[in-house]
Length: 135
Image 1 (cartoon, rainbow, N blue to C red):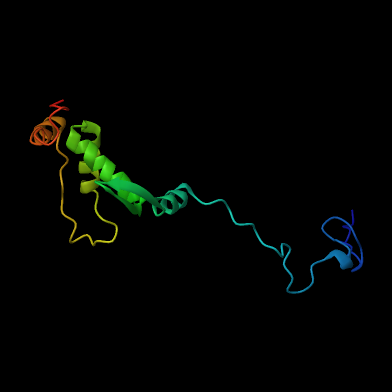
Image 2: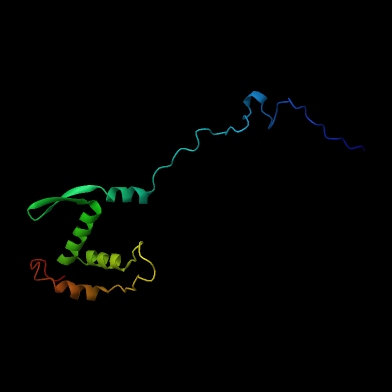
């Protein structure tokens, strides 16, 4: 049985994977000229942007403007000093994390204290806020 030689399609034929010449991309032209649309920002980007916004807080008799991140840090420290174990644990955990801007040589090793140590440390501050007492 003789083999059929593959027939070369004419250069102007139209069919599967052969669009008409007027609809083919011109040399140097992209199939998506506008490109992919920008995606939504990540959660980290949204959180970082929100943390840099400023809010007004009352400090004594004055109202000051601070970044939200600083206001949050002040609140967590205040709660920790009042005897809130969760806030105190958070302060110690954040203190244990190495700074992103520091190098590995300057980062010190830091062990997190357990709950009993945190309670003893907070009991030292009972004179600052006597109504909360030791928890």
